[in-house]
Image 1 (spheres, rainbow, N blue to C red):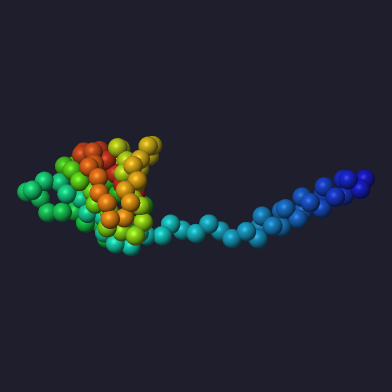
Image 2 (image 1 turned 90 degrees about the horizontal axis):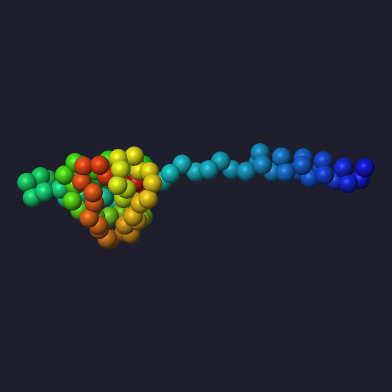
Length: 103
């Protein structure tokens, strides 16, 4: 009987603590620019303070991360699956036609 009362008390305490936990924070935008080079005949594509998933231009060739946070580059347009992290101040070659990045 005492063991049951202790278990009920622990479950009630856990429920109260779970309700009191703060909600997860919304994703914060990276501060700065992600710049994508496609070809010499096209202007650079610049994403200022990016947040979320962005599909890369169809002829994209190089991505540079000029933000304050790492950027993940994906081989598909949905920001799913394996990715390569590009640290602030660095760049990488990107897949043209179907790639994406998230910040």
